Image 1 (spheres, rainbow, N blue to C red):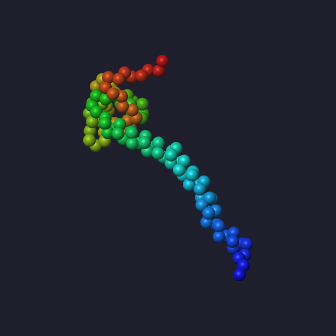
Image 2: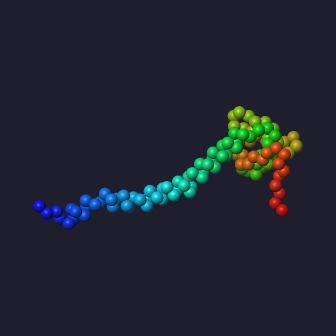
Image 3: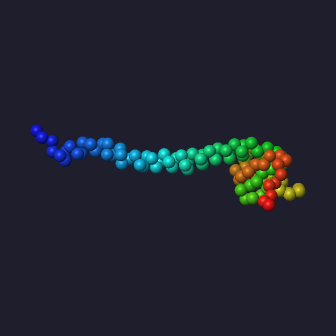
Length: 109
């Protein structure tokens, strides 16, 4: 009994499938390493920064408001003094930067 050439070629099809699948898998790995992982690290750092906000810290909100924290509430809010005797309630998640106590505001020269 002889094996036809067409049947012999289809037997090696399993390795061809893996070779075709390799570029797609490589794209997913590159996508994860270049996009997803750094974003996850940024989110984790922001979450830690927001959790460590204390009274007296100078904060910058995502809207650009700079103020001093006067009260930290447990329900995800902080009270920020943006001017003398002017206090606003801000959601902690909107804080984009925390400046430590006594750090001067950086001015662009």
